[in-house]
Length: 291
Image (cartoon, rainbow, N blue to C red; front, side):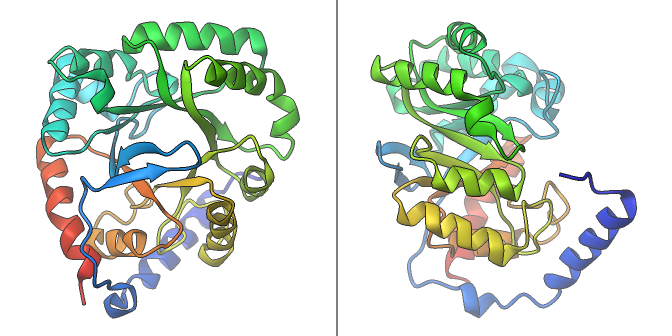
């Protein structure tokens, strides 16, 4: 995939902002109120998650993120604990975010392991590297098992072949109870379409927002692929709900759009403070029925 240059980026951002200038709230209103703590059974394995996931990877790369850099080990652990106390029991981490130790620290606060759902991600491609990741991840997280394990940042059109070794190891781990459910996070349309077609994929983490900002394709195209996934029984987790911050000034519109999608089971949003977390908890029920 060709990288977006600055001119294309600015044009996309401008179009995205324009698309939300007069958001049709009534078109996405529902009669059923939804909350951040709703219990969702995800994908064919029926792994229980909260509707909102605590994202720990804002600007996450190189084994760090805004959350790990700004909040530190205990600060992020305290935020995860505060979310748990609000019924948000879905924790979204990744090796690339460096947030595994923070999740382990949060568990030490007295949270029963079986009461939270931990998702993490790997960029391993070979069987050898994947086995090493499984051992290291569990040590870093302080857990014997991983609820949701994703192949991270898929952008090539032949990833099922390139990642075959890692996929086989994850399947073996699933049979042994080390991984409960498995899937992918995609960053191109080609990779997303392959995920929809792959029987190996049980859960997909997909970029989706009303303005099409930083998505794999335009909204209609991505919606079509994700509906195909859902029709096959796969679980769909939304990400980039606020367009990586570009749409943060339109939180109600973005939340209502995500909550109205019949194919989206839940979504993850990177939260960096208790105030942000509390704001989302307050906004989600209102956005789900806003007229």
